[in-house]
Image (cartoon, rainbow, N blue to C red; front, side, top):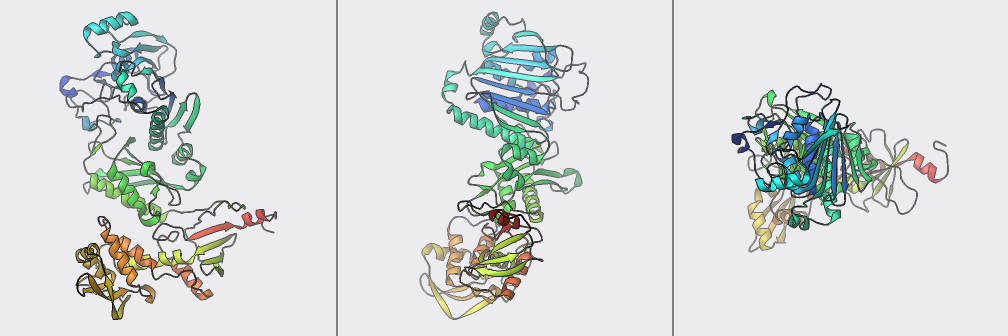
Amino acid sequence: MTGHSSTSDDPADSPAPESRIRRLSDRTVDRIAAGEVITRPARVVAELVDNALDAGATRVSVAVDGDGTDAIRVRDDGHGMSREDARLALERHATSKLRDGQNPVEAASLGFRGEALAAIAEAAGRLEVVTNDGGPVGTQIVAGGRAALGGGSEGDATGDDAERGATADGVGTVTDAGRARGTTVTVTDLFATRPARRESLAGPSAEFARISALVADYALARPDVAFTLDHDDTETLSTPGTGWSDAVLGVYDRDVASRSTALDATERGALNGTDDAAVEIRGVLAYPSITRATRDHVRVAVNGRPVADAELERAIVAGYDRLLPDGREPVAAIDVRLPTGAVDPNVHPAKREVGLRHGDAVAEAVRDTIADALTGADLRRRAAVATDLETALSPASDDAPFADVDPIGQYRDLYLLCDAGDELLVIDAHAAHERVNYERLRRAFAREDGDDAPGEANPLPDAVATLDPPVTVSLTSAERAALDAHGDALRRLGFDAEPFGGDVVRLRTVPAPFGRAADADAFRDAIGRLTNGEPPADPYDPLLANLACHPSVKRGDALDRTAMRNLLDRLGECEQPFSCPHGRPTVLSVEESTLAAGFDRPSGD
């Protein structure tokens, strides 16, 4: 990617006396991944934003007309370029981001190919670069179509030069320009020379949606930089460059921003066991009450560059563990900072992917860091409750929740009503008991660290009931195959079944946490989870979550004050007391001020 930056320069420095842009030798060019750089308008935006960030910009403005083929303008306040650098920047394989002969993996920029501006100029009807490196006069260069160096044949370039009035060096028209330090690149009539490419694009809405998602990716990967995005002269996104919370507010809304937690952690020794190979993990995590139907809102960046990395996306989701409701995905943006040399930024023609030397170790560090952050976070799910009949209550939480909470009654033989000072807490007794049972099972079966797990050499805990007489259970052939394949896992959970002819088994023991025995349906459900698809990485976890449901209190189970108090105390001891194992909330909160407002009464009266 052609660059107008030098990552080692300070924006306040005086103009450098020597050229920042260098032509790369053929040997170095051969080491750079090849491929078409400009395939759609979003790629133009990505290349130009990369340039701006590598130039040390603190403000980046993107403006798009139509689907992006009409016009794209990216303006930054970075280092800018001298006139000579601006001329060189339109040549292929001329860059400030790599020294000749340097290993591309060692580059500390956002990736490069040394051809972006040249490729954009070749694909566009017109490319205008206005730049200033801090001198009294800036530079304007206009090129387009095959007028850029490296485009078309020599004869074609001569003809285009004559038509466009280009200078002898073939770059295009070069004139003085008034501009403060920084660079503005305007691309108009994209794919004017490639009608087939233009016709292959999606509709205007879809193409702009790609651009909007891309700019949002950058805004969340670099919350220290202010971004704006305009579409047809209307501002659609704006972030102030003042941190994660404000970036989330600009990309999403106040609800998501208020129910998120920032992440800033360093995992030392995660790559090779030494402190000099640390993994820095920064970002923002929306609370589990904020979810989406798809994984599009799980954003990954590596060293400040948005990338698509399925393994890191899975690690982020795994960090949320069972806090998420079934079938829902989190809202999260993570920037993983790795040492130079641990990342190959140039493995993908469009730079959308990177190569990680220690990919598994990085993914594990991301998963564990997110899990720790969410365990220790104040997962407050609190909002003003509307007084109409249409708006649902919002889940509520606190990180030391129930020590001073007094149960005052039970509604519909399911919901506990509790006095919490300025709040009325409504607790789903089944969901709360389910969470308690789940964490009890996790601890009892020693799955947290993988040590001393029950098995042939480790007797099962005493939370197991013997069925007398045994219960016969008919299984399908698939269920019987799952039982044969995962019998050890089921025995460790407390299910002991023996063949009883054909696909019938006799169930002798079942788990009995809290002395409440699971039934044959729990056994069938446990087998069903293993029958459908591949077992998860930890096959016990979904079984335990499912098992925790069966013996938990249900609607119609009346609880006296002592039982309510015990349930609150046990729930408060849980690592994640504010959701059941399936991700549903356990506690709702209604503030006293909300009730007062509903009755037109001053709060506190």
